[in-house]
Length: 267
Image 1 (tube, helix red, strand yellow):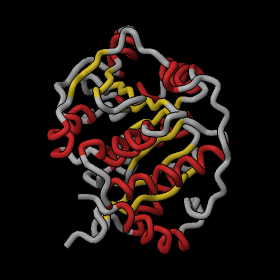
Image 2: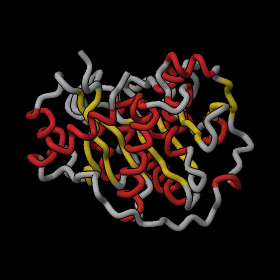
Image 3: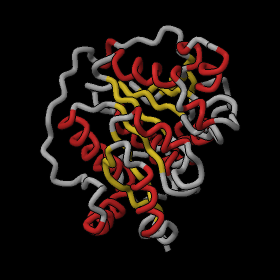
């Protein structure tokens, strides 16, 4: 189980030596104007999928747990992210990691679910890892059409969206089928137009993109200019300082919101 509360404390110390990475602590909260209350946003064509709470727990999704240190850690992360987004009037966030297997997709899902608990927001989580879409696996749901089908086949976006029952105010856009030319597709005019539409359609919406790792593909670097900020997930005992520095350099086209030190404290 991720110990993100410990990770954030450890990340505070490590970020002192990473000047391009903005700390996420002690930031003043600034209220963001919300013109469309979350409970008024309707998704009439969106598919609803029931995921048993026990399965969410087994997949380590925060909504499968009662209040505990695990859920509190994500609430802390949620608060810090909201402070940064609000004070800069941002609402489009990417989550990535330097390498593979560092926990970015689960972090993206749990952050999105935690943000969706805020009554003034809706959250759209997009699986933009078009090389290896896996968000659906973390929810225990079958693969289905998604972002790649919208970009290449003009599939209607409302028909691709999924709402997991029991996670109010959260909508998911799956990745769809895997694409070999994912970097070019993510950098296409249609993708740029989609980000702009998602960003501006609802004033109370936060959009989170789960991107591929930075150092293994060109996808994250190509997509970085479209988002307001990026959150970098690193793994204790695996990610090296040099890898973090290289990832930050490659993401220079966006704002680095902060780092999450994942799997901290595991023996």
